[in-house]
Length: 106
Ligand code: FES
Image: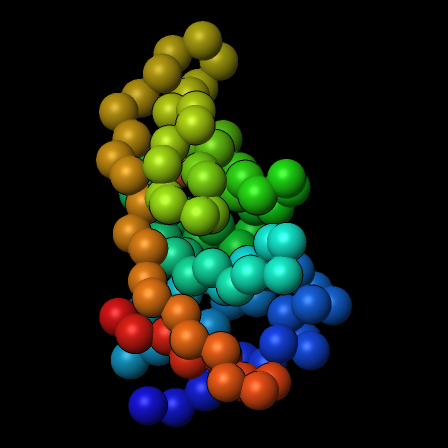
């Protein structure tokens, strides 16, 4: 298993996009913990890294789905004005931290 990022870098940036086995993964740092989820929005696969990350929630830049980084739960479905669109739960990956290095298992 290869390290995908460093804790020191993630602490500074709070969200980092990495690739694990060719899959885009979004790492986030929240309350001293590291979380990993697919960087592809579960709605229409936009890059979640380009969205905002605040209070443990990622907002997709495309149709504003709001996703909890801890468990991938959808807090707000994708929407376009008042029209809500079906949005599946986001894919979450297992994270291991050893020293300054972050490892992700797909
Ligand atoms: S692609 Fe993310 S909300 Fe539509």
